[in-house]
Image (cartoon, rainbow, N blue to C red; front, top):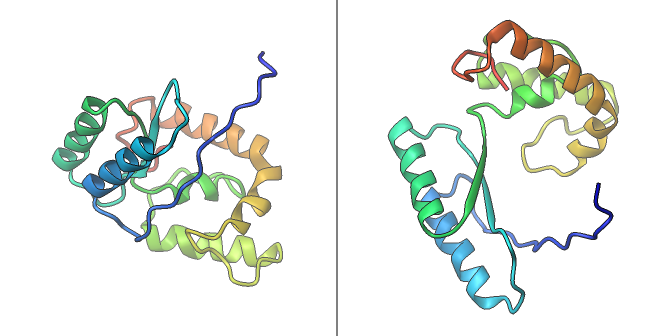
Length: 152
C-alpha cells in the first residue's frame, strides 16, 4: 500500500443532467488550462436515462480523447439504500428516493435525500462495511452481469 498523497483536481461543471458530450468538452477545457500534468484523467458520470447506444458512444468518445471512464448504474440510489437495508427486489427510482428520505430523516438529516447534497456522505460513510456486505450478498443473488434489477 502506498502512502503517497494524491492531489485531485476539483472542478464543477454547472448543470444537472448535462449532456455527456458537454461533460467531455468541459473536462478537456479544464485539462488544457491547468498547468498540472496527470498520469490518468478520469470522467465519472451517471448513466441515468441514457440509451444503451448513447451510453456506449459516450464511453468511446471519452476514451478516444484520453479519458478513463467510470459511471454509476442507472440508479445509483440503490448503492445508498444498501447502506441502510438489504434490498433484492426491483423498485423504481422514486421508490429508492422515498426509502432514502426516510432512512436519512430517521438519522437526523432533516431535508432527506437530495442527489447533490454532500451531507448524505456524512450519514452513509460510517455504514460502508454494511453496504459492502449487502452489495456482495445482492451480487451473489443476481449474478455478476449487472443486467439485473437491482444490481450494483
